[in-house]
Amino acid sequence: MGVLASPTVASNADVPLSLVDLLIDERPDNCLNPLDHAVLSFLDECIKASFSASPLDRQLEPLVCKCMPSLAINALTDGIREEIEDHPIVTILDLLIERYIGWSDDLGRAGKKLYDRFESALTSLADPNTDYVTLRADLIEFFDAEQQRIDKLEGRISDSESGILRAQRAQALTAQMLNAQMQDKQLPACITEFLQGPWCDSLQLMLIQYGVESDEWQRACKLTETIIWTLQPVELQETKEDEDEDTKEDENDEDRQRLYRIIEHIPNEIHELLVALKHDTHKAEAALSDIEMEHIKIMSGEKLAYEEFALLDCENDLISGSTTICKNLLKRVSQLEPGQWFLLGESAEQAARIKLVLKLDDVHQLLFTNRNGMKALQIEFEEFAYFLSSEAAKQVPDKAVCSSTLNATLQLVISDHETRQQKLREAEEQSKKERLAREAARIKALDEAATLTRERQAAEKRRAEEAEQAQLQKAKDEAERAENIENLQAATDKVLSLNISAWLKLPDPDGAMVECKLAVKLASVDKFVFADRLGVKMGEYSAAQLAELLASENGVVLDDGAEFEDTLAKVVTGLRQDRNKSYDDLSGHRTPD
Image (cartoon, rainbow, N blue to C red):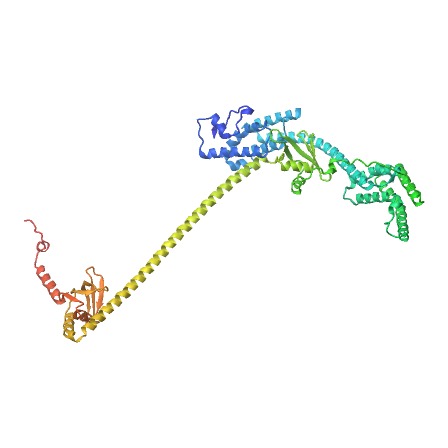
């Protein structure tokens, strides 16, 4: 952080745009920690984005980089969030970019004065000992005084150009309307002179004052049409030739009566219009006198002296509509506001920097000035819409460029971080769901396996029981045969004499003979329980069932087992004998003498 406190700034052409590159050039042996490196890289991206959004002249951009080390020090010391929230360096940069977005090196002495002030401000801004509040106040005072001068110039140009443009359009529209009404008509010379002279001037004033959509203009157009119609030859008013003579005569009488009624009111209407426009009374009366004389000739049946005339010149770009463009593109122009800056040209380095100061919707004209407040361009809506669509003209933001870019870039970083965190959370949640799903599947599989095991065991048990019952039934059938009566009785006596621990060979469910030991004998419930050598239960039988198995040779007694009383007597006798023996005799150890 401290290595940026007193940077050595190179000449304007050599100032690097990257803070990281600047640090490497100044202190190649110094290493940044990851957080500080991220902060400097963030500021680098912000300044590049600012220059991209609102490119200053290439002579000004390197000067802005002078204050970047100071900006970096504050960011590393106070944090990015504090740097954005109305930091003096950022607000002063906003002010300078706003006021210098239109500066270029072709503005003469005024431009040189502005450049010197810009360089001085950036040098002060790079000095950590500068009082930023005072610097900003001085700049605002300087710019306000300059803006007052520019506003006056732009106001004069706007008033002058708007008057000229509206007058040109009014002249062209008036000439166009008169030509349309006079085309292929016959008129006396005095009427032609009136229509193309005082009357044309009056219509132009009306159009400027009221507009082309006004009732006054529409009324004047209709009155012009009526004046010309009343002065046309009477034979032009005749009806079709295929009608009979009486019908023609009646209709001609009606036309004459209508013509006379209209002629009576025309002077008053013309007089009212001319008076409303405050025309010269003498000229107005002279014009009315000429019209009345021509109308008197018509009413008396006298032919008028018609003379050929030339139409007015109405070729004008303001109404010609030589450029046509779709409504969507034209809408972009209609949304423009005075005060906006534009780059007009193929590239930012060569483009002219122009400011919109006047937008005339009625004549579809735009007026632009340069940074000095001098006229730079006058262009119609359609042509400028084409420039915008082809990117030959680009609007340049100039309000709070630096602070808005910092905020936008920070929000983008935060949004990107939140997106990554959200994806991590979603991935973790998905992993958790998958783990739970796998665990649930495992438990389900175990439950299904246990169920299958129980079902298999139950089935095995049923099969064993069924096999055992079949074996017992078979043994019973064989034992009950007449030739086995004596064997059954002997087997019954043998069973009753069996003692605990007696060993027998009995059939398992598959019919194989298996050695088993009598583990439990319950005479009261007639139950004999047998187990294998591991102590696992092999089966239980009644005395009759065992006797039948033995009698049918499906069972064999291997050992009757010792009687309980004999075993108990042996234990008691042994205890009595051991009572008189010493510890050494019992343990087998001899104590040395």
